[in-house]
Image 1 (cartoon, rainbow, N blue to C red):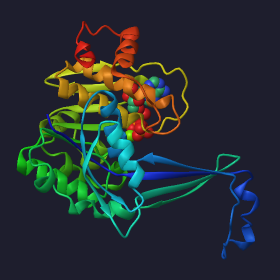
Image 2 (image 1 turned 45 degrees about the horizontal axis):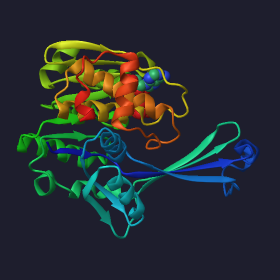
Image 3 (image 1 turned 180 degrees about the vertical axis):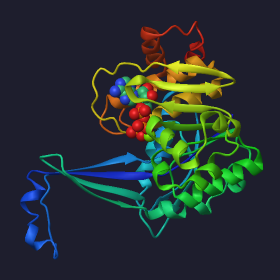
Length: 318
Ligand SMILES: Nc1ncnc2c1ncn2[C@@H]1O[C@H](COP(=O)(O)OP(=O)(O)OP(=O)(O)O)[C@@H](O)[C@H]1O
Ligand SMILES: [Mg+2]
């Protein structure tokens, strides 16, 4: 089965400033700001929705293809993904630009000053399913440059590729018309609770009207787990208690990865949802969105501490 993951590729640059920004922001000088903060730590983390999803699918024994744009600084990131089972042949490097980058400086009071540079991501609309993945059996359209998301949805509909429409963080910037266009005819809509309410508000669709346009629905609800509506049934998926919450970022991406890998394996929906929930929990327990690691056997053992899969997950151990 060929699974294609589209979405952003990004680096997160995390800085820590051992002081208070507010000590330097003088109320009577705000018309002419020129400030420099001496930071004492800088970390660069691999991120972006597409690699986040693909990385977890790789851990679960899948070999997804990522179709996305990155910059001239992508080099060792490609190797990392390949090592973890990701097919990167449709990740295109834009030579004269940088990978999308999120720079955030946090002070000792948790105040943040951040900037996001779109960079190579703004070229994503130049990639095409027709060129790279016309034979895909399943795709996901995750947060990316808006024009690319819209184009990919059109292409999937035209080529008859079942796709998960995953506007997630981009939900806030789309209007009702754009959201309706994206979700029309998708195999599944995946969002968190807040984003789901935003979509209902912006499109004016009731849940029943929504279900007429989409094949299935995943709504994640943080510690309350998730709601999955598929094949005419509704599943309440419990969350898996984390050993510690170190960093909540990326849990949603991992949930989608677990769910898609399960779809690939043909697992029943209730098991598929729980695989998603456990995959999400691992991400909560680590700093960064690709800092977790496990073997399929370790994953299945932990699943069985909480749930009974009646042997369905033996397929991951084969
Ligand atoms: N506090 C928690 N305890 C247990 N599981 C959690 C917790 N928070 C999140 N999860 C798991 O992660 C999944 C996705 O979380 P959530 O609904 O917060 O998504 P999100 O806000 O889109 O996350 P992201 O920051 O990755 O975009 C949940 O369905 C659940 O399985
Ligand atoms: Mg999310």
